[in-house]
Image (cartoon, rainbow, N blue to C red; front, side, top):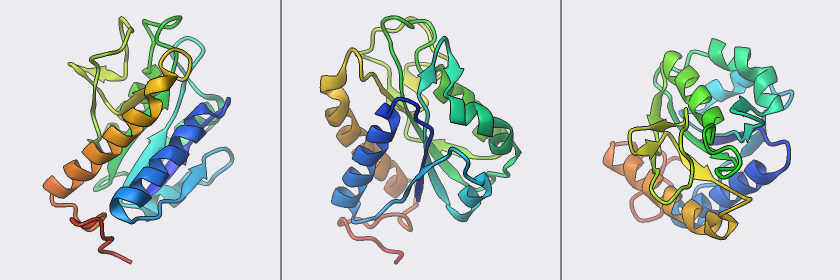
Length: 185
């Protein structure tokens, strides 16, 4: 399992750190957090589970390092990989493009053969539209460091718990053990 992050202002990187700490606490797994800026993305192929962080930048765009890496990401064969997403955005001033970047990357991952994990309920958010939303769920954890920062840690804790349970129920106990024990050292 690896966490791959593009983060211009630092919020998504902060979220990645919170996620890594929760996974360590809940499942006893140490998860590397890698900044994708300048990274050879073929390293993603070494992992079976990818957690990808990307804030939505400007009006529904990918963050700068993800824009630079997008073609390389799309070129990866993610067949057999599980991919979860998390992202930061502003749901008040960009209410109709909130979490679009997460949706752009999720679409690319699925087109490359990945199976998405970690959908997150859209209830409790203030946005009006999002490419990162399918039905009543976001494709991953949606965070807003501007208008709902007080919910960030609570959402990360709930999402990591939901993600671990989804992995266990899906028969992916090779990532995490049932009693908080890592099974694959």
